[in-house]
Length: 434
Image 1 (cartoon, helix red, strand yellow):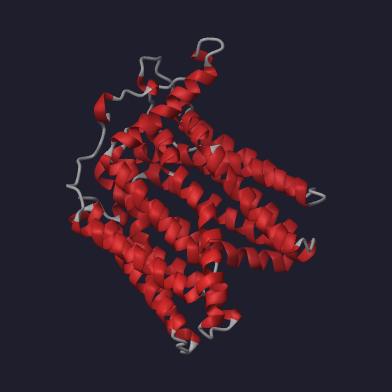
Image 2 (image 1 turned 180 degrees about the vertical axis):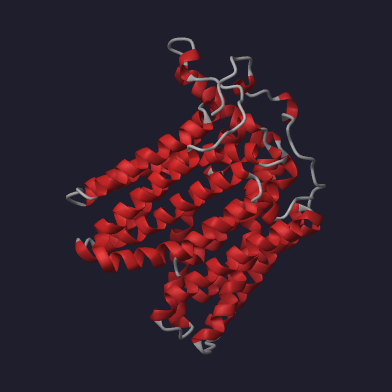
């Protein structure tokens, strides 16, 4: 798996613009999240039910709407789609300023998230146009780095804005990040590609064509061994990790860690993941992506299981002693996140990236909703420590199996497995550069 390093990837101007737009909007999303929690929990006092409603509202569109949005992302000009999504989201966030109650706020949040389900696959598709094939790993690593870095900077900046101007000031700042992102993306000059827009479809057939193209994305994932392994690996990882992740505040109490350290623990995981993203970009060029994926799963699972054993055995150590462990968990988990995104990019032709990327995320997203419920139910029966021990051990075994029985590394995939030909690749007039 050869690749250029992160610094070399940043020399590509088009990638820098795409990366900058993503980082800005990601930063705004975390500012937005902090402000939403503050508004719902402290100002409106809607309690745990209100916070749960916010979490579910932010997740459901990724399960229901994202696959359809992926189809449109493969049709629409990438640049136009991303800029339009940024501007629409800016307007919806400004709507938060006048939302009178929780139902209206949730409706605006659902709409904003739904628009985001189009931006993400369009951005993933554009990525392949901004860097050469051998730079995809480094580019994917930098995208993961941006995601993890904004998890640290966004809440911190959001907290400062909240202290100075309250939730409304934070919402205004979030809207500004989307506008700035749109301005940056407007300078993109992507390569032209064959496009199929809705106006070219025969009258009355749009729904059937939509379903057909969605099935093509699903068929491509099922036909590609690389994607099947990547999706199965990420799905299992998401389920096992999220079984205990939402229990982490209670786990800290079991370990004798003060509640005031919770923010530091979350930040330390993000710091580890950010560093790990850079390491994967540098070290991944000489190793199979499946070996990196399995080793990352095994190491993450081992650390999580060790924390679980400590909790069940009543170990008490100074709170600062746990920070290196949480940094290590973030460091190891970066390999899972980076390799999954890289495999999807490398194994999928560009005209299918939107559909394949969103279809590949359906199962992990569904498990993202189910895993916390399963973890809470198990914790009520056997205790939080045993949930961590079992989930960590399962993840470690999964990773070891991936390293031991990993498939031969497949070449970069511009071919369609089993003769699949995407509808988006059918003859059509060349569009102007998006």
